Image 1 (cartoon, helix red, strand yellow):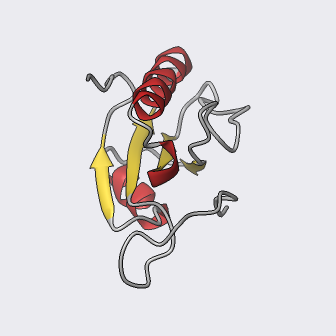
Image 2: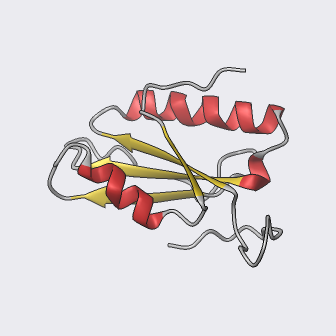
Length: 116
């Protein structure tokens, strides 16, 4: 799935977000929702929503962590989603990194809230 947001070239010939925020999750849809809300609030407050994307990777959740994920956060940041069928721990971060389109990756957890 590709982001549908128009990006301005950050540098050189890279056309896309500057930073991909990687958020693995497993069986914690409420925490994931809270984390995405905190990410959205932080990016919006710093006028950075257009410079980032969020890549959520479901590590074989039993509860369908992202059964109704939107394509964008409310502030406009593109949201991409992937799922592993088998939980292999940190391997889901590698899957998310492969999905990312930015040259910089920021790894978070589904219970990590960015702070100002």
